[in-house]
Figure 1 (tube, rainbow, N blue to C red):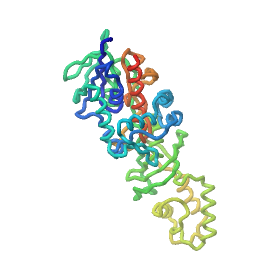
Figure 2: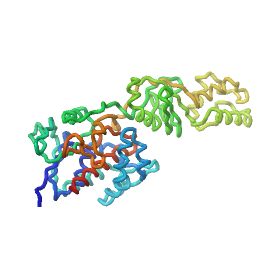
Figure 3: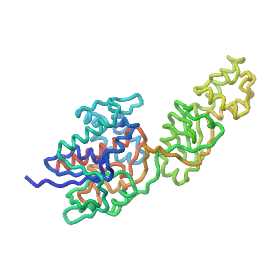
Figure 4: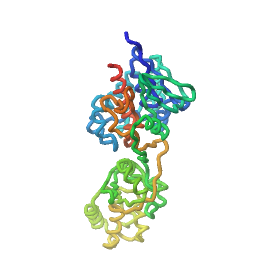
Length: 403
C-alpha cells in the first residue's frame, strides 16, 4: 500500500473542519492549524449562537441567486453537494435540524455547539490533529512538498488546503504564493440616513418594501427596518451585497428611493380615494388605509404639516400627493454605512478564474486547494455563506479520497 500523504489544513473554521471531517484517514495524515485559541469561532456565534447551518433551498439554480459573487462558479459545486446533503450529513451524525419559516436551517437544540461537536468528533475519530494558536507566517512551495513556517515551528505537507477566512493577513499569504487577489470591500451593511421621516421611529418595520438606487438602476424588495442610524433589514442588506463594489466607489454617498408599501402610486391613490369616499368623517390621523404603523402614518402627516385631526374628506389634492410620495416614492440621502459585527462579510479574495471548481484546486500551484471566505465569493445572510463552505470542502475531500 502506498505511503500515507500529509495534508495540512490552514484555518480551523467551517470549510477547514468540514474538509477534514470528510477526508479518508486511511489515506492521509491530517493536521489543522488554527491561529486562534478556539476552532470554529464563526460557527459558534452565527445566528445569535444558534448556528444558521444552511438554507432550505434545494435547487442549485435557485440557490446561486443568493450569491452576489461566485454565482456562476457555484452552480456546478451545488449540483454535487447542496443544502439537502448538508442536512443529511449532520442528521446522520445525530444532529437533528429544523427549517424555520423563513427557510433558515438550525439545529433543533438551538445551539451552535451541536454543530461544532459533530465536526470535532468526526475529526477526533479519524485521529487527525488540531493545533490551535499556530499562526502561519509563510508557505513555501518546495520540489515535492510545501514548507509551512510558523512561530511554533515548521511543518511540511504533500497537500495544503487553505481555508483561512478573509483576514487581510491570510489573503496576503496566498497572494505571496502567486494568486491574484480581488480587493476586499464590505458587503452586507446598513444605510446611514438622516431624514425627518425616520427620526424617532427606530424599530418600525415594513413587511415588504422596495428600495432602489436610481443612479445604479438597481432595486431590491423585502422586509425593511428603521434603525437609530437609518435603514436596515433584508431589502437593504441585499442591495448592499449585490452593489458592494459600486457603493464602495460612491464612497457610500448616494440617493435611494423607498416604496414602503410596494404599491405603485396610482394603486395607492385609488385606495386613498376609495377610503376618503367611504369614510369622509374619519380623522386623517385615525385612518388605517395602508399596511404601515400608526406612528409612521402620523409621522408622514407631521412632516408634511397635515393636521391629523382634520376629516379625511377635507384632504386637499396637494396633501394627498405629499402622502403618496412619502409612502411610495420617498427619496432619501445615504451618507455612510454601518456593518453588522457578527455577520461581517466582505466581497473580495482569491480571483475565481484561478480555481478549478470541479475540485477547488488552485490552477496556479499543484496540490493546493482553496475554500471558504478567502475566495471572492459571498452571499446574503441566511446560511448561504456556510453552505458554500460545506459544498466546497466536500468537493475537496471527495477529490482527494478518490485519488
